[in-house]
Length: 369
Ligand code: PMP
Image 1 (cartoon, rainbow, N blue to C red):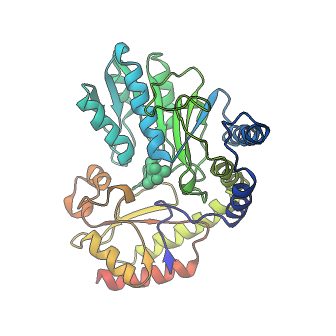
Image 2: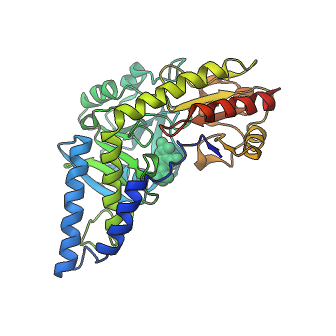
């Protein structure tokens, strides 16, 4: 089996899983309970959260644990826009967002908000001048993902921060789900950001919205208020602890993981160049973990299925948008229907081997011929 779909999700790290299994048995009390056992779990969560803040190197942010990045994006975008409706109903986003971001903006349009989508250069980097021009007195939020899920393009978070910071009524939200564990980012430059543990070898079902202390949101879920007004319900202590553990390992191993991925990326790209008519959609601004290619004239689904028959697993587009016949992100970047309907995303990991790449390219060559 050759797994090349690490950007859809990663396998859980062995150490994270082992610790999770122990924590499920130890920290089973409800952290909202006022007895000693509940308080012990609450204290464990607090320690884990403090370590998470340390790992993320954030100074003025609160952590709201969620089921993943989808829920976190919903809380950030709906929660901010609705709370600050009286200050303005104009929002700005990028054309390369994950469906959990774009779907929130579609909902907000139905609620009467106006949403502008930014233009970009030939490499898919957001046009910063356009951003500065679009901001109006009634703009309350700018949402631009740090790394796009299908093309892996890295945006200039520092410059976006500086532009937004010139307008104190505007907050900057960034979905950093595909950035965590892949690139170094100064997260203090972002007012609200969202992440998900299963993208960095953590468990599925745990993520976070991390927001500057002074940012006030409208709740999206309603319920008991003991743990967090913004995310009522029983906090899943073992999952919360596992998120920190996964990040701790990602942090400790960052250098060696990136070295391996860079080597695998170089090998993959040079081997893919052997295939005639193959087009690269990702570029030098993309993270090394994501290589998006097209075989114009072929159907993406058919390529994926043919590879799957050989036990090789890749994505045609972001796993959350698989009902569409083409990759919207590739279409927006290339304006080429043939590329957008024939694109596949190969995503690499430090677990990827030379032999994985060799076998993958060998099969892809047959599929492409
Ligand atoms: N944002 C991005 C950029 C993603 O890649 C994903 C996962 N495909 C999500 C959000 C959604 O994350 P989750 O599965 O944790 O809801």
